[in-house]
Length: 150
Image (cartoon, rainbow, N blue to C red; front, side, top):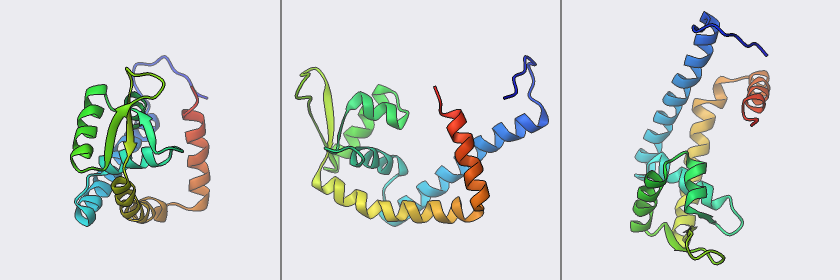
């Protein structure tokens, strides 16, 4: 692993970092536009429903959901407000800790998640996976494994 004390990035370092940022921004913009066009639902809603749907009881503490979505507590609370208005989730007290709020996926939320999921996967395949070889995917898997270690 290369470490440097220089205050400037090399051309290769800058291109790698900038490419990651631009690729992420472009892909999320395109996936969000497709989700809105097909389902009148923003990508952030899908992400929240998906995170809840991944848990055994389709529920997470509000703070855990915010952490998974990379949102501030107030940002997560506002998102959950909008999802609640649509009856896709409901807030409830945590059974073991009355001070904590749990966000739970509703039956309507589960149905919406299932509708959104196929659009999301198709978009990932079309805009990301189709442009990469199996060797590229293996390389990226290795890179993410190195970067996502705490």
